[in-house]
Image (cartoon, rainbow, N blue to C red; front, side, top):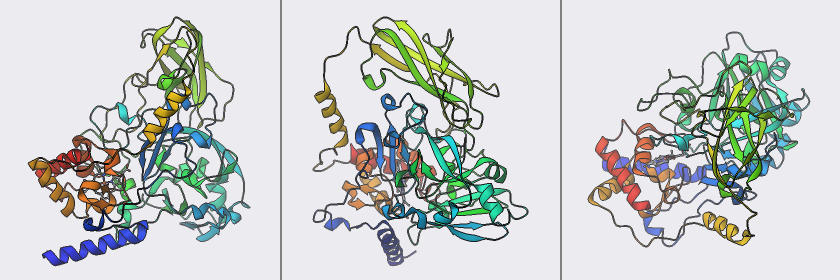
Length: 512
Ligand code: HEC
């Protein structure tokens, strides 16, 4: 490829990204003149409730100390994980006008939410849990947000069953084995559709058994952050399958060719390259954890202590939860609280015990209705998916002898500090390898800067996380670049190992 054609294609690519992201991808020279419009937390998100892993795509984790004692998670504390930038807020302004396409049924159709509401009504209590919830506990630094326990929430979702919808249009065509749902995120022109599209397939049986298309979350229209106007709710399945902003439903003989279905969201061994034959992340295995009191160093008093947590098992529900205060040497039965929203919701459990002041560590272990017992250890896997080991989720609390003094102001300051962006760096000093990596960053195809903001490189892409804010370490850059992550393409066939290593060094040095 000649120099100029390479240039030309890159410009075309950048133009496409600019148009789609609605963002200014300024060439580096003008950076100083036009400060980048750094994406902000969407209005309505209270940063005190969340650990902010990324603003774009939005990835916010519920603080453990704010995971409540109720079976329902209020929207204000419900985690968010998006694969691409949020669609325009306009789509939830008049939710009834949102139109869904239905394919692979006897009478393929387009139908508005207003019309959907006339077909039937169903509600399900269901946990949405990010497939990577618990990734922070894996030791091999998997690419992706480092979620602790808080990428999960439970809500009541109201909508219409897919079976009702499909029956209304003559039923599913013969020979259809999968249901594919496609999200309504904007795919930048000129980008490979299947690389970026948020699209997942589930077995058609699951779709017809209990899957719903929901327009309400906890009794209110689903807000944009949680997939409104229309979200697919696949009860008991991992979050990635619960497609937001559903635009198209397709019954098909085969699974989707989209990257996040074909090779993404599959359980593969550490070090193995992505492939289509590993198990897809569908049903959530049995899991529980204790949320309080005393998480995040919030004050908790010695004496009679009531610990509380949540337990789930996709499609099955739990029948028992035990807790241990000696790291699993002995177990005591916890109490399952009465409110039971069905086999796909979580159950709150509690355990009351008398404890002296000082540090205590508590773990919990759930057993589901089919007898599966939550394991002690996580299942190691490349992407850090499906964490359900009880050991890593242990909660250590420091019980106080007497009530703490009022320290509200200090806590507030702390929170505000976390929220604010780090001070600007004048310049960064790069090693020789870092210099080489900067070239790789600038010349890669597709260009890293088309999707990422990195001050030192003068790039202001808005599709992926801001690298100055993310400050990834070298290992996670290598993992992301080698295999791709989410909507980011893999570069292992496009770059040498040396190039990837120098790129990792560069990004680490440039964002320190
Ligand atoms: C087409 C857009 C796109 C391009 C091009 C792209 N990325 Fe990304 N990148 C993303 C998105 C989106 C994410 C967030 C993925 C997620 O969490 O789902 C991401 C995530 C990352 C992460 C964070 C991984 C983690 O551990 O959370 C790093 C580091 C990264 N990219 C580096 C790069 C580098 C270096 C390049 C160039 C070689 C590059 N990206 C090219 C879109 C892109």
